[in-house]
Length: 77
Image 1: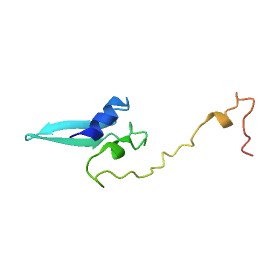
Image 2 (image 1 turned 90 degrees about the vertical axis):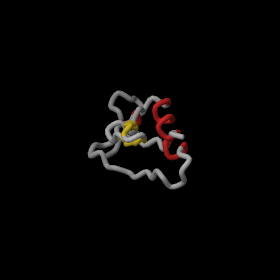
Image 3 (image 1 turned 30 degrees about the vertical axis):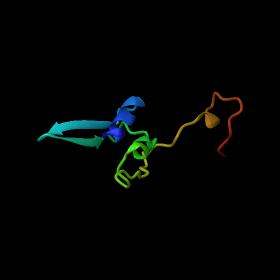
Image 4 (image 1 turned 90 degrees about the horizontal axis):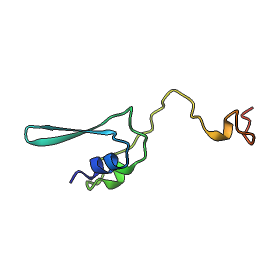
């Protein structure tokens, strides 16, 4: 079964590309679309088939707690 692909496709991330060749299927992660939710890893029926690895995007994570428009923001100074 292709539960990793289905879970990613149904969760609206669409970060796994499926290709068919020589009567088989090949699945590849689209790095720019992957959000690291781990859903594919948990859905995969093959133990240890998928491993997640943290990748530094090179940009600082932005969130509401430090946003200038938030009157209750946390100052990072």
